[in-house]
Image (cartoon, rainbow, N blue to C red):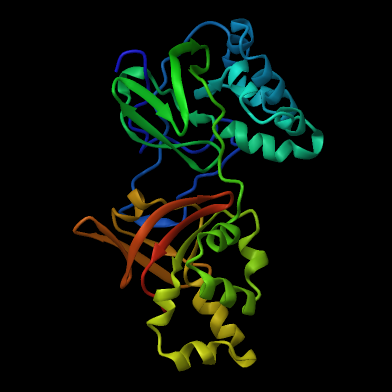
Amino acid sequence: MKGTLIPSLSAAILVLASGSVASAQCSALKGDAPAVKAVAHAEHAGPDIVDTAVAAGKFNTLAAALKAAGLVETLKGKGPFTVFAPTDEAFAKLPKGTVETLLKPENKEKLKSILLYHVAAGEVLAKDVKTMPLATVNGQRAEITVKDGGVTIDNAKVTATDIVAGNGVIHVIDSVILPSDKDIVSTAVAAGSFKTLAMLLEKAELIGALQGPGPFTVFAPTDEAFAKLPKEVVEGLLKPESKDKLAAILTYHVVPGRIFSDVAAKGATAKTLQGGAVTTSSKGGTVMVKNATVTAADIDASNGVIHVIDTVILPE
């Protein structure tokens, strides 16, 4: 892949070397889950990523944003880091006033989330590129696509690669890529097929919890999944005296941390917020959670990831 980038990142560490930005997202998994380890990095002489970008002269907006988000010192750290760097022209594509709004102190956390979505831990070089999801330091995944000799990351084209710095590498992109800014509950509601789940979460007073920082992995039963249950079961769960039982069932569908489908497909046991454990497996290319089939996977939210399931799973 001439002039383009990215190796297999399934073993890439999700934690910045400083330990101050992200935490390992698969700590809730045991068993056959793959180990998470740092990508090998060759030591390079010369300026760090921030100074390299500033010297290039076309990343002035990015430099200002890193400063406003308090990330300059982080990206001057040991690393290694891979940065997909939007040019000034890329930032200029955003709707008028967007950059100015993001640079305001009250929007620091939102700005930080966006910038960290452009950063991967470890050194990712052009020679190893392939179509794949990219684990970003933001916690969410960006999609790398290799097609017709070009590479895109989400909606952005990679226009230059392998700008090597002392603590990592920069690849230039022509658009700013944006992570999901909706939490798990808002994402599920917007999907339109989780009305029963949303209603039950409200009855169990769990909406606030799932709008918290997380991150969480939610195995979300559709309306059709709840319809499989006997009518009297759902009606019984809606009674005030069943609130604790309802909460137990719903939290049995939630696991701390972000667990993506490629990890779940390996077969793993994860402890749920309810306290019990669920086991994932793969059968004929389909991911299963206990007796439920995952029908849609890896739906990113700002505070976690959703996997859609076709059956309500019940604690034992």
